[in-house]
Length: 420
Length: 209
Image (tube, each protein chain N blue to C red):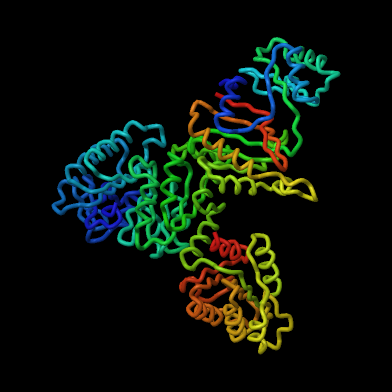
């Protein structure tokens, strides 16, 4: 699989300049010195020479990306076999998902016989640090989250929300399956967290068995939970969605984190990829009383402990004379300037049974989000074992690996994941 | 799809050490009466048959049957199920305690799964159940039991009796083992299982093969 994610030379078969075509999308994302374009109907695409066939390329080719009509995929595959490529990604649809399982199996068997790995068919493609072999609408930032998705559109909808190490749209799983990617990612140095969008799995027991061996956190969203959704799954990827209650129980048994929305998937991926696990309760620091109360409510609701401030902490907070009521959640009041944040963060982080913080910087007229953010980042460095999540109206937090959520509910739900 | 006969059910339950209340099957009401007298009145009477999937809906279940009305209740059941093929009528001792439900089903994707919930007729509406893919060990079984919202009811709510969840956990583990070995069994419904401070006994069983 390493040849697929880190290929030296790549061929795009079906490169095109036709407006709004998949072949053009791929060509734009892939264009580089190490990529050859193949299209017998064109001299060149985007100024790059086109070969008639992959076999005409003189260099060795590790990976072939195929985006041609389903009916000619088989003959293109035969060319790839004689070219001795190591892996292929078939972008083209028109196989099992439309009831054409026979051609899909034939192609898979042909490739397996020649020991060539296959991703797809019917997918958006793959993205790694080294290559964007997909027709995603943009290339993601580098990061430590790997995303495996049965849907290409969902990849596009999250691609700019967070940095990724690998993205795989695995399509119909004719050859390489979800579990194969999990095993690969478990050893992948760039990947810290694995996120999955799933509609159906082929073999639930095998999936559980593999997941048990994966050491990295896995976050999963499952579609096709309702009867209506299940029917849609059948026509989308041709898989069976199964019983959702059984699925959730099975995933909990093997430690997978199940989320309910795409937003929660990203929120959770952020917190798990950026921060250490939380050992201890949560301290809440806010410049707005209401937000502090809401945060405390949510902590109670989700079973996150909010410890009392102890004597030593109160002593450290003594110089904050404007604040009469020193409790956790700590309201440092609307007119708080960065210095107040600094004192409060330092005091609460040094309390032993406080394992992490939720820090809120609401937009009051005098609030300096940028400076407050800097203090948070300094404190993260000073207390590396204590995670901090924020609900800030500004400041460069996520660039510095501090998750920032527009709603305190999301902040609490995310920090809760650091206990699971 | 058939309901497993009483004799085979008995063998399976014993083989996997799943305790059930004193039960015997009869076709003669006189013999049934003698058995009822032996286990002690009141008793429960229930029809059992290969194609009887919902026995109470047919009027095939009567509980708290006494010495005085035993024969008339028996005749009433026979009348209710006229035309149905049954193996016989079960005579069961009545046990006191809280009602829970345990079950096993085979999922298309995950294979055998087991279920635990508060028993009785509302289980399908309230759906306060926990599920696991088998096999499970005793720790997991205890987690399953504690996971349901209604656990407080078993744990001695408002001075009520605390039940022996250990016995319940053993039963779950035994069903887990059973489901892996007896592949011809499609599903199991034990509802209710009566549980009190010292025992957990299956009082109603439906094993589908």
